[in-house]
Length: 80
Image 1 (cartoon, one colour):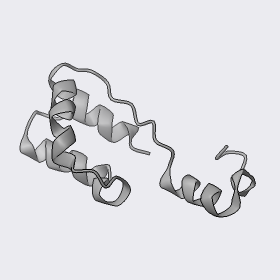
Image 2 (cartoon, helix red, strand yellow):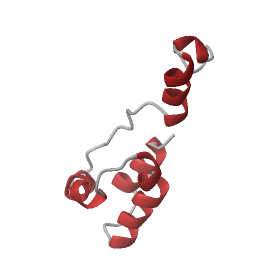
Image 3 (cartoon, rainbow, N blue to C red):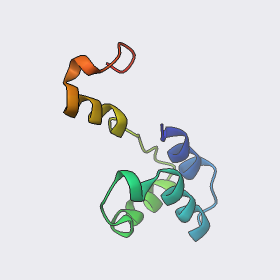
């Protein structure tokens, strides 16, 4: 669900701390990833400055929770 945020950051957002804060907020970084955002920020900025697309490849947390609790059969056809 975060590809549009990454694309905005790389291709439309002006390089700024405001854009960095928006990336943090709208990717729900604090909720979904527990790594220090500041460690990744140089990579994000490099992609932004060089128009290198970042891909949102993680499985959605909601889907991984379903699998953890009920196995693959807990997923709908669309989620598989």
